[in-house]
Length: 549
Image 1 (cartoon, helix red, strand yellow):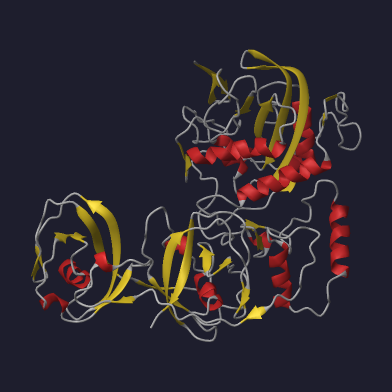
Image 2: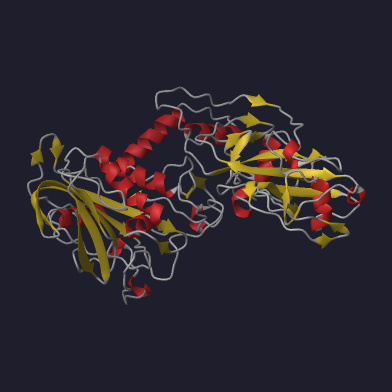
């Protein structure tokens, strides 16, 4: 039995449902559960992302940095004395520990760096103690709604409540992010709520402060919940503005604000050389300075720039524990590749004969239009048809031969006949495996060009153009490369080609790209003067690079 309830707040309508048959855990799409309760409340900020939402009339002049806000209720230099700060239920204390603050901040930044499609201007978040104070003041009220009202025009806010007191806080943050399953870039929400997700990944939101409260009882949409864990996170500058996408789509860090000086870590614009914000540990900036001082004392002062970059890459690897001793000079390997994407076809080569991937690009010889073999289909051709004859019939190549791209399909129900380019094809009502022919495009690339910009894999084969790379891309450090052999689709094509041994750094040249399904992780290495980084997350799209004759 499902029971729906709605709540209107600043023009936002929020819906949730209660299921009384199984374990409850909010995942951004509904309830699942019985005696365990969990739910999230909508962000009070404005946006077109949730169903049934109505716009708020507050304009862009309300965008203010939280640093300009007065510190209310402060008696000790901005510190707020909490009500019963040591009250606890079991092992859960009634305030965030330093480790929990750091974990919440790191979780936000981790998820911001994983958005799809990739963000070109996503900025790194830092912990803001004033926001943490405002979050604590509101969490102490144990009220299931957004507030306080005087502060809402200045901040973004996400709420979550759970009766499982030992629930890891990062899992509540993950619940907000999981609304991305219902979000389609740039601004369409096909689920009950997406505004928690969009506030979390709003590119210009750079400060976060969170707090918890263990509430004896809490009124949640007309029901009394005993012993609840209440999480409040405040954000600045606020997001969810009407008519705007949460971020700009594109190559990660390609449109960072100038204040970051081109620095990028984990797909985020950052002010830190090592990919970790100097103010990101909420316990103390002094701790960061001490940590960096100790790290610097163990570092060889003669190390050149390339080895410094390599060390940074290794430090960010997801496969290394903090206690592991890292080599500051990764082994350099010289590799070369003689693999080609293009297959040499004859006038009678058929798709039905192609068994090994990739079967997507062929070089046809001349005079294939004159062999007189049967051609079945138009646009879509039977797999028993000659690839090169079909290419001439379709017009992808002339009778002089050339390159064609081929897209295959397991089966189509029928084929139509036609007369084109001097060849008559026949039709049939017999279902069969099929393929489509297209011309091969050529594109000028630079050292920062990525597959994600032009031909990312999206669950089906897609043809990339042949790219022409300039010389001397190996030394272009701001173009990142992730992986070895197979690379993430946000990696630099031209630097990946040098890394794989397809191109020499001193020469310009053409490369072929095969966009393919991504991997669960990618291993970095130092090859041919290019240091690729490891990437420990699954990506939907990847690519391999091939030599061109």
